[in-house]
Image 1 (cartoon, helix red, strand yellow):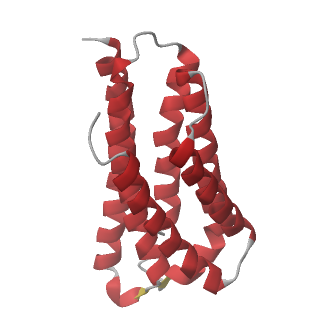
Image 2 (spheres, helix red, strand yellow):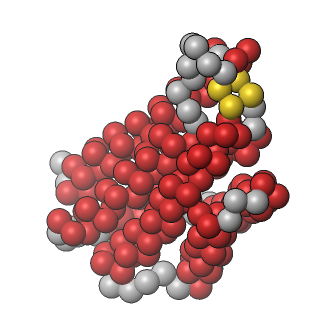
Length: 187
């Protein structure tokens, strides 16, 4: 087994746990649908996070050509799925058998942490490229990071519902563009 194959086992496990968290959360909401007050941005963020998990796993294949791994580089690579998992853990509540679940209330109760972690995800991504490639991303990759950084940074600060509704659509559109332009094919 080569180094990349060995290291990707743990990365894949954590990404799988995040996907399980998201899908399990949706399943629990379906089971508690009579006691759940839906809020579409929360459900949309589940979709965005699923795409982010899969895109992260897809993009990790690009690291296979790296011949020399050090612990710092691996920790930065590993931090991405860890932060994604934490985002997955925050996006949906655990439904309660005793009280109704209000997704809107849960969203705003956790929005500062959620978007703070989202910004951390971007910082880790930039640092990972710096450590592994020797430089920060350039061009469209850097532009996408910057656009998401501004949007998510404001999401951590602002509490206006109109902004948060716009933010999930903005993020979804940027992710579609990001994947289409930079990660459409496995390289």
